[in-house]
Image 1 (cartoon, rainbow, N blue to C red):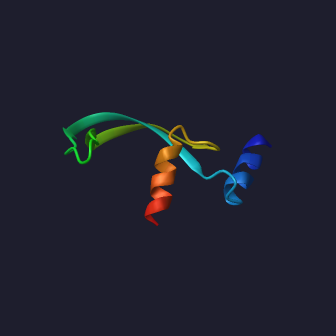
Image 2 (tube, one colour):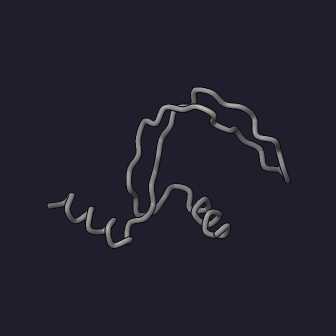
Length: 68
């Protein structure tokens, strides 16, 4: 019954966020632009993927929505 409730929430678009955990296998530095530094993951192992009501990084959601 609980999984059916969660599926219904996903189908209705109420739960729309996703969370992943990946283990990097091959990375390279990201070219810093305007103080933004980081890594580019060229290869990784996906360890976990799950639906979430509130993503751990809401700023990422805002950035994606701002691009569209």
